Image 1 (cartoon, one colour):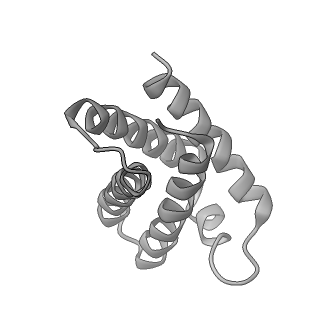
Image 2 (cartoon, rainbow, N blue to C red):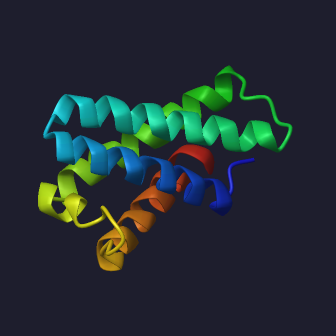
Length: 111
């Protein structure tokens, strides 16, 4: 149900929120925006494939997004997250986020 494609969709959505949150300098806005974007991206991804995002799925998505947020906040500085903005986004930083999302997927969806 939750695929590598969805991980990429979620990653794209959350990167945008991360950049905006860092630019605004508001940790709480970043946290809530990240989580909201992560959940909505995941739900939208499965629903466009005709799958209903039931309560069990929502619980797994929340765990997935909580996991990703905790690791990103722990492993990235504000300047690293800022390096993702604009046309010259640092691919090295973006590439460090993808394994976090994949690990959180395994922890929450492969049980």
